[in-house]
Length: 322
Picture 1 (cartoon, helix red, strand yellow):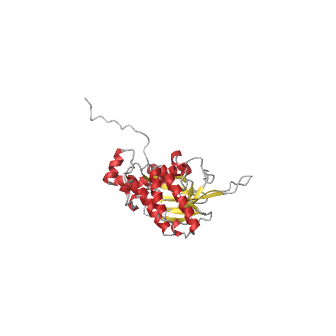
Picture 2 (tube, rainbow, N blue to C red; picture 1 turned 180 degrees about the vertical axis):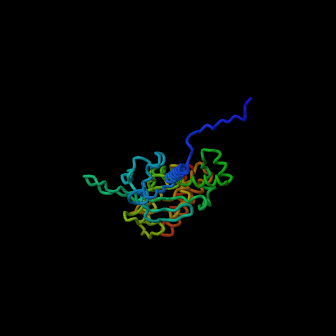
Picture 3 (cartoon, rainbow, N blue to C red; picture 1 turned 90 degrees about the horizontal axis):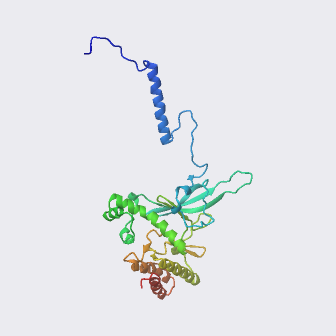
């Protein structure tokens, strides 16, 4: 039976901490806390030289290595595409604002190397299409365009059908990737579209259609072509729409405002809503509407209206819809 009256000294776990000891521990704890926050948020400790891993010039390092092989344009890459990891991106201004996205002018360049053999700086201009976050987008025509377009996950399909917050996020995220995939397919098929350089998140980088001075090519709607130029532009349009139809697609929103003309070459732009005319039950309607919308611009400037109807029938045959 224990004797409670017996005195037993408490075993020490170490020397007693003095006031100075406690102050030292508190200071070390404060230093560690600051170090953790500095590592997380990029703070610089007092008296230390600030450090940044940003580029020496420009707004950011190239995002080329942020994209995987499936998020880059079809190979072989055009000679103007810069894949150097030492390149920097510089934003030069805005080219276009839209309901779903804004398009910016971006320069990607490789500075001089500074080696014994002087290497001149290389640069290329690109269009950076940045889709807005879901709260600021206006996808007012989603349902019609997305018929026949499905996500691999049934859970995502159900969410999009219900219009839940997650579903709206999924719908918004589809557009950037849908446009990148469409540009890749159309470029490969020979359609005159901007070359898709890469996609990272909701930013799509593509070929800039315009001059080296950063001036964008005019839209078809801005031109006043003579009879010969009108006939040539119509022939280019018919050729490109035929290639689209042969691949099983319609533009879905074609007009004189999403066709650019650079040095006489017609270029099709704005293809996120591209329609699978076979999978979409309204495919033929989209096909006819594209021709009718842009055909109206041509007939108002002297094109024989017979050409518009003839093109619609030809495209239906190319798409195997008649």
